[in-house]
Length: 357
Image (cartoon, helix red, strand yellow):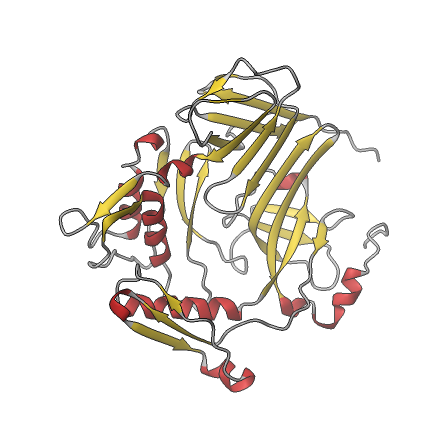
């Protein structure tokens, strides 16, 4: 049965108004601040002057444009004229150069994590066009009383500090919380566990679905960590079971003056040890159906794959490339090493031109 070719739709707006159509679009999402590169046909756009305050929205869809922009951001400096290319940063980049002082008179003591992040976010005037949607932490986590930045820190850094405190101490799986931009909204959400969460995207294994990258190095997981926080306070965490099996594997000592007390130092040590024990290896998924995937939030179900690879996966990064005769969406996920075991050589030599039953 013949498959109908889908038409790639692209639209760019500047402060909500129409803009020239680029010939190439590349986006990279791996954290809170994505990047976008636009290339325009030669001879166009030399008349335009893009300012840092301008909001650029890029829409990429199949057959029709999406309801929400695929990318929203801005240029990183004022007065940048361009002839054929334009490099953009995600909107949250505006909070990186916006400073805040946290002292005895201006602080977030006792606020829940979500309320503290909301308060900082709403104080970034350049992001006033965005609406915050913040999930309540469960169990509830509050800001400790000794987080201070008397000489100032960026509001972006402070939001990240609060987010890292929101770890569920009742689970051995270190998932934590993430924040991201979706259209004109700012989202703070718990990272879903792909073992229990309902997938938002389902893919069937095919010729181009997987691009597997294997790291043949020995397990680099650590089972012991020491953390030095503010004023030299020291805390440590070790996994006795893994030490008995593997022997002592100590990670490099972490020293960070922004860690306020022994309790938080212990938590940082614990997170680093437990996270490293869940050794993962990168696996790339290629499919147009991943166009709306959100890193650290979207769970993808893969079916019909060989060698134990049919599973649910958490998306970690997403790259979109659109050009002449090209439309590629690639997401990187991570998967436990033990699903490969002695079958890894079979997977690496898999003939993708053969049909799978």
